[in-house]
Length: 133
Image (cartoon, rainbow, N blue to C red; front, side):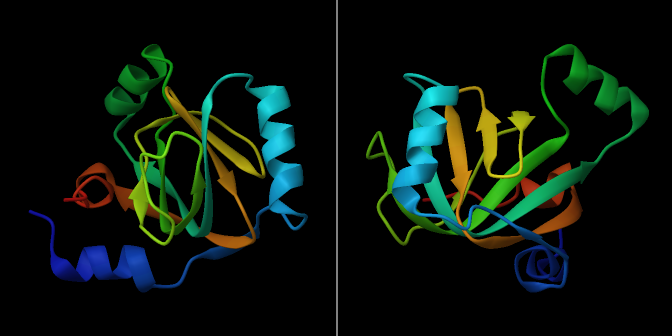
């Protein structure tokens, strides 16, 4: 069972500080469109890259499906190319399929990591306990 303390620590506790994109939002979008033509993109700030604590069997299963044992949470959406999310809303992604210093890709979306963020660890239960709506 996931506790409020675990969720609170994930959202507001300390983590490893990492830098996202430091240039302009337009430059980051252009890079994304070149690397992932036609794929939906979502620019986010105040983000947390979550490394999921999984068993070896769970890791093997995810890897076999082409997924990373990682997800992304962002406190603030800046722009969503598909208008699925409104600016200032929060978002939690699905499992990642690739990751780079400024981008976190899922099956359907590339999340563009604007400004500084954090890297943290959490269980699958805690990370996926947050749902919109």
